[in-house]
Length: 288
Image (cartoon, rainbow, N blue to C red):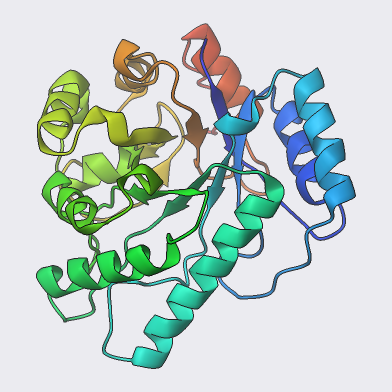
């Protein structure tokens, strides 16, 4: 069965209940959310009553708890250690996010590996691994390193960098990978030949580490290192290739999450999910 959803909101008043209701409004059977704004540290306390209500709503509608994904905030950067206070903050805040995931019963937290900001990739990889070894100690949550487009000094722009981080993480059962189709394309991987990409990933890292896929078309050509998402079928990857990726048998039980752009002030996730399920391109999402 196709497990597909999108990014949804999470606010202090409705919390996980609101997230589930939004996902159901898109006819999704999974979803991804931030436990607070991704750009700041403001967080509200977790309401256990709302969490239980959300669980019941998920059960009634066939959403499995283990398929739901949390995304870590963008302000966490474990790659750079030149400012020890900022590095310590990133570790501390990530640990708090892991604790919030546990309170919500969530299994997976997607994390951007970070940017080295001039320190170099090798130093950055060690910094990331050192931080993960610290914050994963005693955690029940699995951190999924996201494959990145290679914009600026991003770490995780190729499979070898992801592998190097994993190799240095002690708690192998608490580390995994989130593939992002736009990022893979922009990093230089030819996702039009997706099985070859998976073959390479399996050889370098191992497909057993993949627990989530971000499903995004790209505004830019392969190898551009730009990281600009596009709606499904409207980008350089194209609808047919996106469908082949989404329905690839090697990844069939892994949650697929849309992070495609809003069209004006409207999230097109319901229409995109319908288009994906029907395997028919929706050419009405955007005006000519």
